[in-house]
Length: 89
Image (cartoon, rainbow, N blue to C red; front, top):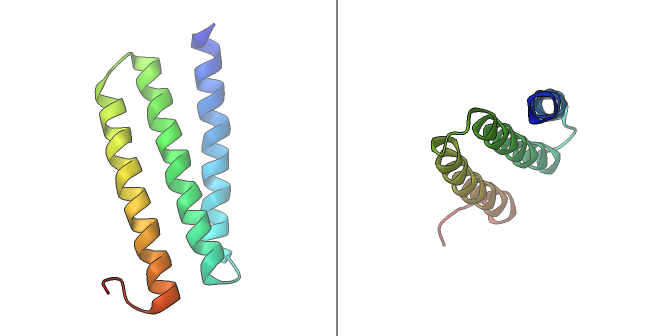
């Protein structure tokens, strides 16, 4: 059953990622673009995890953890830059 469900889920999440890129490009203001970028890395994370499950490889889960940490730090840094104008106090 997973041979049918995982590619379907990857296709749906891929469509969601494409829609996030559209919002990232045409977002009306900067907070919308930051939110789209945050959602885009979460969708990429889900795609990597699904691909790791499909191939039964542990390497993809480690890559997903690294992307999650980098995405969180970058979102915090961009948000802090938008609020205060500087990243390091």
